Image 1 (cartoon, rainbow, N blue to C red):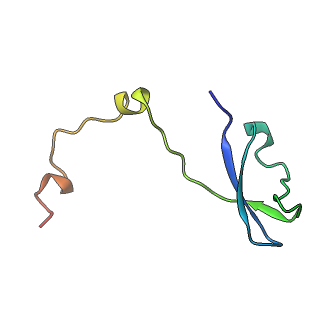
Image 2 (image 1 turned 90 degrees about the vertical axis):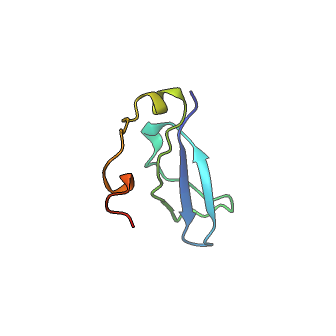
Length: 72
């Protein structure tokens, strides 16, 4: 399993960049590729993929809004 990827934005030059680093270093300072130190970590969404993600997903037997009763 690889390290998590974090997105950062440089406040000095506006570039956005990614870093792979251990979770323990997620909030550590990160310099942008241009060498500026004034960066901020961006919030990102988590994507879960693979067999475990589909196996643990709740199964629906229909109904609800997407079942057609209230959509229309």
